[in-house]
Length: 321
Image: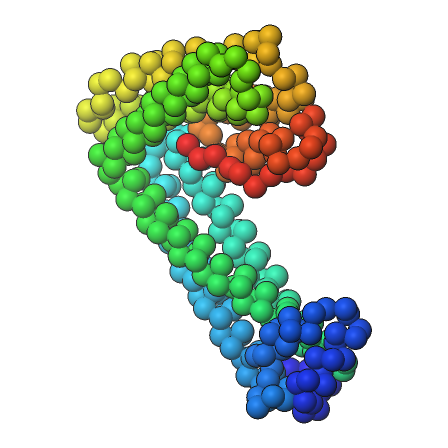
């Protein structure tokens, strides 16, 4: 708590002072200050209690990240005993990055919590502290959820490392998903080509999907090759028709590859597509899909801006294989 904590103040008085100095809506200010309020007065005790509550939420986030870190260490030990294959290394590095991000987020929130109530010598500072503490709580709760999901993913990764059946089933699930995506793209392309005046955004979206599907095919080939090598080293069987199914996905996706060459193609999207293709060409299988999702979101932001040539802000949409 700040050594300059404000004296007990009527809530209405503090709301009016903040509204006058910030032009914020008084009712909004009142809602933000509610955690600092006891019997219609903002009090040092209520502020202290709020800081304590936020500290406990942040401590929970730290604990969840510690548990995820232990799960990562366990999975890393298991990965060290697995064959030296890219299909293992890429997954492990992805988890390492996620853990590092969470630990950095927790450290940042700790610093923000310390700064939130460092200076409460004016009504506006009290109000800003209330807003900051709410945002810290929101971020800490997000970290709790993300760390829990990460721990679950790490446990699944460790189980994947220890079971050929799990690895092969996961690969077959990915092939199933790629087949569904290829069929969907083919259907969309057929509809676009049959239309008298096809929607340019729909055409662009379908073109993006075909580029991503090409990368998914390359990724599936690399993963299948590594998993077959792994199975061979352990003297285990491998699904017979995986490569043939991947070939079929590639053939179906190829039918849409010349979509951008159609005379009705809207060339305003060319720069977006060229940028995406450059970024995708720099990605080698096995693919870290989070990076690809960011590139796709940037390309698709053409849909939410008035600048399809690529100078607008990126959109929010991502695509997962």
